[in-house]
Length: 151
Image (cartoon, rainbow, N blue to C red):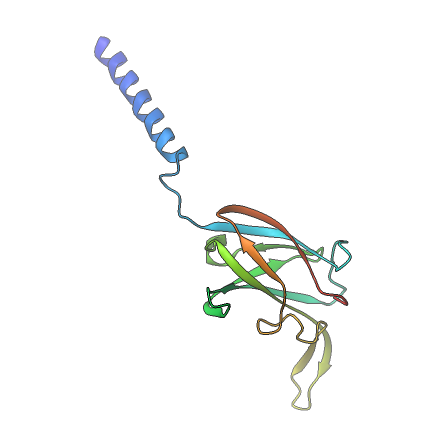
């Protein structure tokens, strides 16, 4: 009977030790998560209009200020303007990012018969032209991103 109690106490001690190791950051990946809300330039919530789709991408910016084309992270944008990075397991490295956004709408057809969609922002927030940059901190990030005038 004493042997069973000793085994139980050892097992409880082992489990407690594992919990402490897990909670102390030993399993930390050094990555960040990112979600938030798009806002109009006046700070009010941004929402997509009927028939629109938003393509939001966070492009990592290097020390030189150039975009690292191999470190881009797309985010899913809901109709109410809320977004979340879900690609790459929902994680991205901490650092500086340029915000690229296209808002596509329309069902016009080109001469070849393929659907044609126009970017409501007219390329103003392409990776090369966007002036919107954010800093992603380690851990969980919940950001409000203001869009340029006219978005």
